[in-house]
Length: 520
Image (cartoon, rainbow, N blue to C red; front, side, top):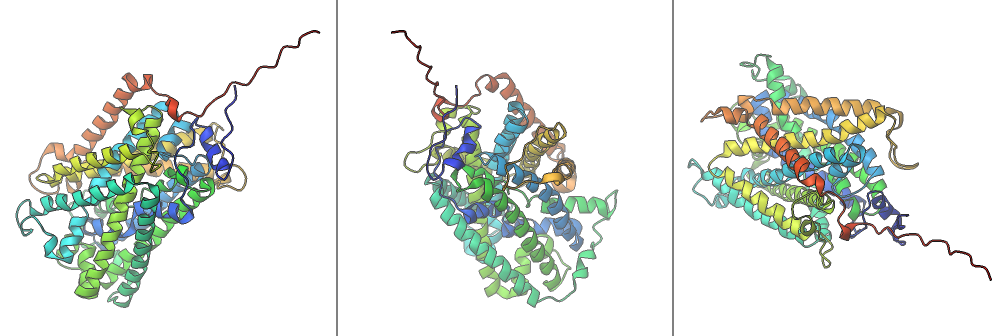
């Protein structure tokens, strides 16, 4: 018995990577180098993350919270290097799920995929809510619910705006990867240009030196560990931003020459995000008219932009932020679809044959696009009258992503120590002799930041009244339920069904037997 050779032609070599997993090629390869880079950087989204979470970082740690940006970059860059090496070896859809399954085992792979899938759906809802932080600041006309002063005005209006965005990302993803790539690429181009323009404009208006990043604003008071405690809380603002670079690899089955382009895209995405995002944060602190008052810790970077650039240029920049939020939500939705498709193709989700079906017209999995969109909309309902609970749910989503990443880097480290890890062939990305050191850093970082993320601090999980124990311990409880319940379902039910569905399986023809010689 031998596996059939991958189809000959333009993409024969690209498709040969799928043969190792027993998959036949189904998705259309149309994405070039910049498309894969755009997918990774739009998920991280410099303008979305920094504008959405600056208020939290500054309010928790003062200007010195800026140091969490390079700290998170170092840790996540180690993870990205491991992912780049895996992308060169296995550029397949549902990257985290398939990588964990390949270098670990099917049980670990399913758990990593499950955690990443749930987290991605939550992340779509969380990113979509960022519209509320920007649109009403551009114009009060976007405050459709009340005037913004009512108890639930802001939370309810956020859901209305987020619903529009999720409907948009669902439709775009349902109509195929080519449309998604065009919108995403255009949006990323605008975001990169806007980031550079913002950096220049903030630099022109600086009123203080870079030593501002040494000021703590007395935020260490009230923490048992002093400023270290405050800094660890504030660092979550950076940890919530710098992830999602694996999206470039998750589109591997729709990319041209993915084993070469995906690793480059992963590393370029995180490096570009670090440099541009770090400069935006630094120059914002150096240029804002005053570091006193509540606006920095309530309105965040939106306030800084309007304060420094004025209403006209400031609102123009906020429109660019809106575009960044849009393509970020689109990228997160796209990555979730590929993950659901990859798991369903292995019959590892309920109704797998339906979820793994590829539209013959659009050459993309349409049903997962709709199902994920509906689930993200359902999660938004929690935010209408319980925004604190939504904050807990969002934080849980980030924790599960870090856990899913650990589900890749940890078995990869075990494989290295046991001598079972084989990097891609010559000419493709490899860490070489640095692999073990980088992998150790990635695992230690992932474990440490997971503990930091999940720690039941009131400042993170129940910052304002009403105070409830289940909000403070929400991350621990919900992660345990989602991980434990999910794995119990897999162990008792799903593992007995797992296996590549027949319609997605690479044909394995039987070799013809040698004819038996006959005598004349």
